[in-house]
Figure 1 (cartoon, rainbow, N blue to C red):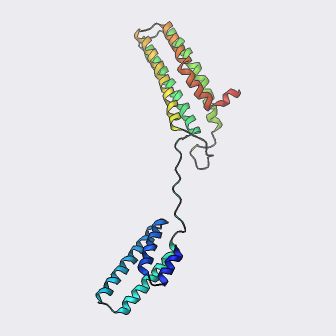
Figure 2: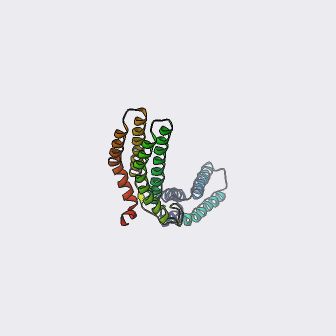
Figure 3: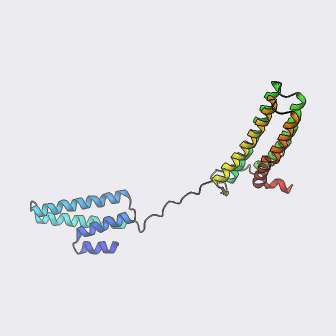
Length: 239
């Protein structure tokens, strides 16, 4: 392409050379300043041709302007990129696994803490007796302690770098749909516990029914939470 433009300029076909130069600049995505200079040269050439047709200027001045435009075009050739820039690399969508693990830790503890606070509120308002309050805690806290222990140990194992820091190793990405499915399971699990405790406090179920309901929640939704924990915190299984 560049040699073809030089040949056109050498043969005096400046207009064709400028048109090919303009096309080449677009094809290789030349810098804006180079494209602007080419456009300016085309305008200068068009103006010079107009003056030549009107015969209002000295033919020698017309020839000098043509030579000046041709020389400027030749000087622009080396500034054209050899090839168009590669398309921007699309960043894969997702969340780093280590970051998601921290979210699981914080969300699980936060949900369980909210459930315990909800239970405490109903105990204070006489919705639960002291024995029932203590008994319900013994159903809720061991599972939380087991999960939190595994997750917090993993958190400590990765204490030497922040997952988003420049010097941190690039961990695998977890798909967005998996991320939001995990958040949904944890939140629904917590909501089910809250509803069951609220139903007992309103008198809609007995304490024995609450204990059975909590067992069903732990063996139902709790199974999914357990799978999440085992998938992202497998170190606990090596124990």
